[in-house]
Length: 149
Image (cartoon, rainbow, N blue to C red; front, side):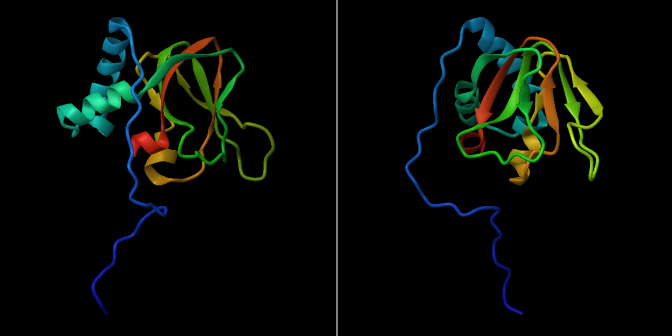
């Protein structure tokens, strides 16, 4: 056998890319920064990369009670919101049972500011694993897949 070759989850082309910058109030910046610093996903970033990440998050944007923020089985496009951080409100996670219709039973609730969801589809480039529904009016931060990667 020959030497191992690298494996890529999706094709990529070298492109000139500039990360987005979304202004935030000092209060919002502080809240989002505190949440990001608690996450293992971002713990190894140097200060410049962390700043790029922090300024690239969009929001907070509003989701009304009943809104499906994530739908199980959906594929995340490069520019769609992929990873979410809860600013306020509550959301329930539903996991469909094999062969069953509908959202499926509730398996988890996000109710603490700073909680993350949606990272599995970004980390593994796979369809959404569950449906996340706002059970109260929510405010969320988000970042797209391209910027996350």
